[in-house]
Image 1 (tube, rainbow, N blue to C red):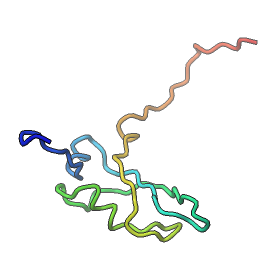
Image 2 (cartoon, rainbow, N blue to C red; image 1 turned 45 degrees about the horizontal axis):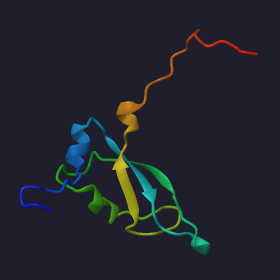
Image 3 (spheres, rainbow, N blue to C red; image 1 turned 30 degrees about the vertical axis):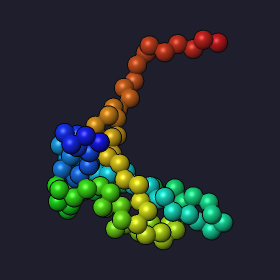
Length: 96
């Protein structure tokens, strides 16, 4: 990496500036038998400071399903800004 380049670190402030109020969280831990846990949910970010990196939050979380600590994968909850309600329409026709 060149001196003029900097690496991007996603923070709570970045997520808030995008207009989101929560994170999507998935467990990267393993269940019995070595199967991936993949337990997921959302985490409100109201009580976190703006300068807190998302990666640091992941090290503090414990999965409620398998009990794994510190292996959470966090992403901005994009559905808060991209999901649109489906509006009824008469444009669809049955092609039987």
